[in-house]
Image 1: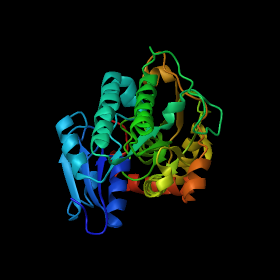
Image 2 (image 1 turned 90 degrees about the vertical axis):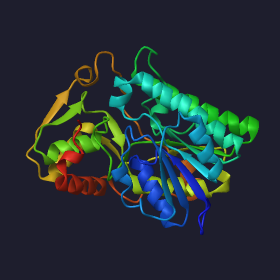
Image 3 (image 1 turned 180 degrees about the horizontal axis):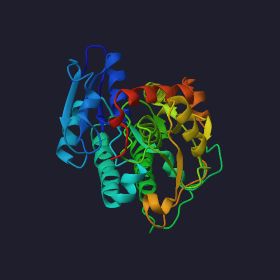
Length: 333
């Protein structure tokens, strides 16, 4: 299964937003790519540009299928585990699905990687830090979570278990693991259907709907373009010293949600207004959020020299242009 110029990489969840961009980058540099995806949130349309590539293979299946994961891991040289139930909206509405996919699925994939001694990159999340709103957040920062009865924290908990599994397999059994904590990633192919804020707001702006900002709008986030994130992932994948480490991946330009909405309206030339929507109305009673989430990426930068190349304005202009061409593609269902 090895490609002529490189290795064979298995990407779980590779038909998703980040996975499809990663598949393109790996194929472009000469690797062969196998994508495993059940298409619950991913889409074959995301892979349209690589479906006919001789080094590409798509397998419709789930990370919960142990036999399929075993076979594909055996055939690969490296595993990049992206498959997960993602997005605040999906996690809040379907917490059991989130837990099952993210915990059991990760256990199956990591076990298969260990069985065949394959290097594995495990995609974790900034949700790991929970309500810790100080910043920038370095990889050793405390996790601050709410009550287990709040569905919001099931995703953070599941990804923490995933990280712990990766770490103990590395420490106790020598599995070559790399854990990446992805902060807010945006760009082409990201859907607004699962609570992702930029595609949702852009979709509203280009269709002249009110931009619905949840909470007070004063909460801040940092947004990295998917191409920059893919570059960071490849840099870590290729660096021998990355093995055994955990790395934040994200931009550090901080913006409040109300200012983000204003930027989108201005850059889209939209006539839309802004409406503040209480969290309880958006997600149900008891929902909790963090006021600030800013990554410290010094560890990643020191190891690979990586830094994001695209500004938030450039990111927004690209997403707005794509949404204007096909406005229904970004609006949440």
